[in-house]
Length: 311
Ligand SMILES: C[S@@+](CC[C@H](N)C(=O)[O-])C[C@H]1O[C@@H](n2cnc3c(N)ncnc32)[C@H](O)[C@@H]1O
Image (cartoon, rainbow, N blue to C red; front, side):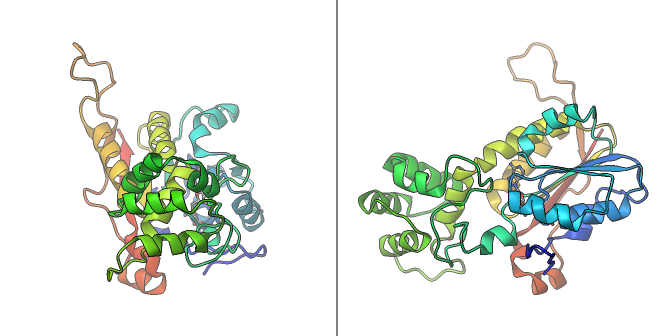
């Protein structure tokens, strides 16, 4: 585990594979880390780029920001921004940066710190208030979703963000057991409303994933930001996307594919006005963590890395 003075723990997944993809040794270019977290990938980028190179890093979680500020305090060429990556265009403009000349990385999902926190409500293995906000100042928490959404809305998010087979039963049980205040209360409701089927994954995994995606508008933010950063990338810049579940990976794959095509215009458009092909895939198939890494950090087995270059 990587650790620092503020007790922020996170195991950086595929650190070398992600940072290698940026080809950033001695680089004077501008790089963006959209998901700073504990600063593991950022630190490796900073070790490799030249003093004239620059890294701009975003996170919405104030714990991550504070921990990374401490860990990376000796780097003058780092700018840490406590904001959502979906504001990347606004912040780069404020910094007078027109183009991402080097590359941009996304390491999606929650950090080990968030997942294991006894108070943040991300884990079905820890009893805590239903929260799950990446951004602790955001208005909507998992409590609001669980206690305020209609049964129909719950079914929708469990099906679409969790691919949960028993969405209807679980949503119905939630609605008839309100108010639900803690993670363990929710786990118990899921347990009682689903059949006891042997599975490699815990029976609450899908519902917790769906709630986290909904609370943080994860897929929507990611999709909108991908479009923005691709348009901000200079020719030759790299985009590196590390995802941990099929919904994120599907979005990464489809967006990269779309921007690798010769035309993204609507079929009804009489002439092409999209600007044509913008990306080229660096790896046709996603890269996975090595057996050695999976042995040391088993959650890395679900990581998939997709890389593309701006052309
Ligand atoms: C898997 S962790 C990143 C870990 C980091 N790469 C490291 O090695 O330490 C993902 C981080 O993304 C952050 N995050 C999630 N959604 C975000 C958003 N919309 N904008 C900025 N950061 C976000 C989370 O708060 C979390 O700290």
